Length: 283
Length: 164
Figure 1 (spheres, chains in turn blue, yellow):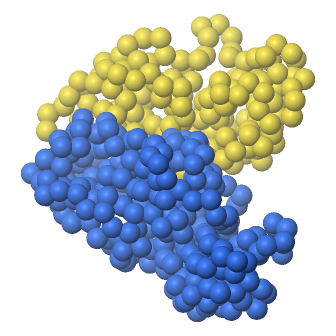
Figure 2 (cartoon, chains in turn blue, green):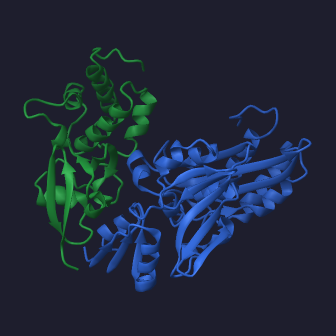
Figure 3 (cartoon, rainbow over the protein chains, first blue to last red):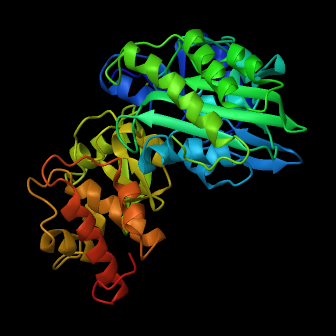
């Protein structure tokens, strides 16, 4: 352990001040479920760390038609809310009880695949992120925040402070394939949200996890669904497009080959769950 | 940076320790306080053998800088073990043969304690869900689930006749 200073700011202004003072040398940590293993192993050797557990960023509340999730709200808090069922499902399928008590929603957005599943649900829900600095706040869509493998739009003096999620009534589907039933990184994660108008798909979101450098939207597949009644051909076309458009990789959880096959299958299953008149859990 | 003094509640006593920055709760418990029931397994948050309760909720002490628990209530296996005999959960683990090497047992017992505090009559599914973060390489888990069932029964005083 080589950490020379561990700062625990008690407020956001204090945290932003420390960030401005120390710059990128200051490792920002929230729940510690990603940073601490690296520090324990000596893989990450930060001189100074800022812990956000006491910074007062852990609120989770419904304001009108939005769910406002403080960046350090835990995955357990996400599991216990009922405003957005898909987020409950995403939390339930992430890690274990102890890890959910520690890991945060904001931290999950910095967790590289095959982790970081909450981002998959948040992408399908059109979530936005609020980035704060002593220069002021800015809000941008999560889809624009995630830019590459462990890369994002966050500037050196900024902190992710809040995630905003529109609360809508549309049916959603969230499926995660892992190597076991729970507490597993993803082979593939699929989150789908459809807007309907006169029995046709008016808008679609299909988000994928563990098949790209970060959680991604399958935009071509989304576009193919618009105007359809979600008939079998449309589902097959969307599943194919999602398969073509993603970048699966090989790691200790799965091979690229297997992930590529599972993407299409799980996109299809998710869409079938949302097909009118179809029973959930079809093949 | 110089060491700092951190105090927290441990079981029924207040403890004060002097630590280097970001010393883990696990290291404080084992190395400074000599409380070795909390195990030092993977230090990655992957095995659950270092599980303790912080304000009654299970957390992994290997991932927790001790500064983060300042002023909080930490419960370890030592905290719940009575001066004489065993806690009902420990008794149930013994009776159900829910341990062989015993390395995972303190973590298993602490998660089980948190589960039964939240839900005195958990379903089998709840038990499995609660224990997913704790790895056992000996038992195959079935005796552990059985032990939690028995503990639930014993602690509710109805001799194991719990709703499944």
